[in-house]
Image (cartoon, rainbow, N blue to C red):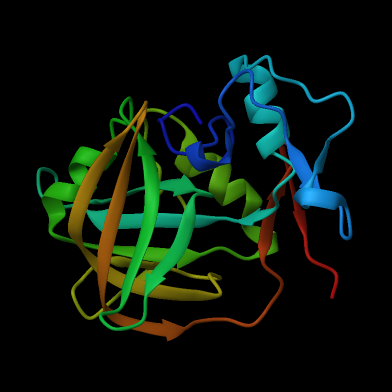
Length: 203
């Protein structure tokens, strides 16, 4: 995304890559000495566009990470699809943000931020949050979490967090966040990101 969020234009799943020159091999049950066969025609070249294309086949949900900008007193946020649970005890989640993001420093400085799990009708909202500059919250309805962070109207659920740790990983930062408050918000279908496009889950 334009702001350096990871929802539309960057895929931060570095662990999915296999070093160039290593073939994928699979074990053949019953074969002598545990022999293996090489996967057919493995592709070992690794340019960034192909990397993104392959990882785009992993469907993800989309979240909006929001906070009150301590510099202006107004709401700000970014969209990301690199969100995951990390631990139940303590309650930890994680997401990835590009180094180029101009919004993440504001969210970090706020102390508390809110992860909004977006619903399918909120794809335009997602694109609005991904735009660099301007009023990202123009015409958006929101209420406050217990710590004062924006809970976006129409989101399926929200988690209010604080930064537990940050880990540099290539061109992104992995943010581990501790959950302080959380709740369901609205019923509906999730916003899904797959192969470079937004869609919905038909269960």
